[in-house]
Image (cartoon, rainbow, N blue to C red; front, side):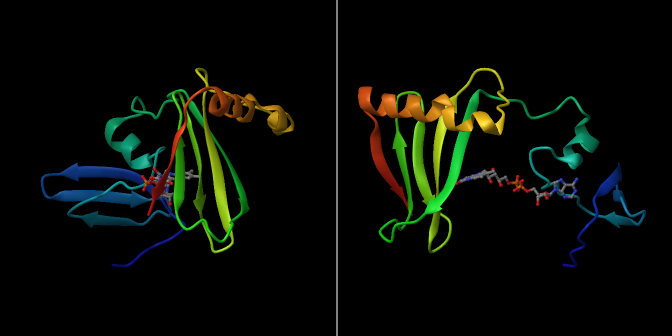
Length: 140
Ligand SMILES: Cc1cc2nc3c(=O)[nH]c(=O)nc-3n(C[C@H](O)[C@H](O)[C@H](O)COP(=O)(O)OP(=O)(O)OC[C@H]3O[C@@H](n4cnc5c(N)ncnc54)[C@H](O)[C@@H]3O)c2cc1C
């Protein structure tokens, strides 16, 4: 299947026989089937269903950092607490990322200068001390 990079879909027009697609570089094509796999802010979804169907914030932030990976970390590890979870996940032979979920009702926008003081780490530490965190759960 030929792949074309650096362009997107401008318009779709479907009839009983197929779909006419106009691309952002001005080219056109007619296809039996169009599959939209363009992610959370999908243009294809917008073209088919209109702008009312939009992703919305559901109240959880995920903090991640890439750090050195100890040799004995072979798979993803998750730790589950009563209100949030944390863990780490190998991404290369030498690196992994650590993550902490934080429940924040309103969608936050923090200045990067504030990050070191962000409450997520302190809340999670305190939660680990005072609540029973289950884990690790090892994912292959
Ligand atoms: C840091 C991070 C870590 C994650 N970790 C995990 C995990 O451990 N486990 C897990 O299950 N999920 C994880 N997720 C979530 C997972 O990555 C997403 O749920 C998944 O990638 C969604 O797949 P998708 O194919 O729907 O969209 P995407 O992976 O977002 O792919 C959409 C593609 O469409 C392209 N695109 C967008 N708009 C257009 C356009 N207008 N025209 C042409 N192309 C377009 C984009 O460039 C992209 O290549 C993680 C997400 C992030 C950000």
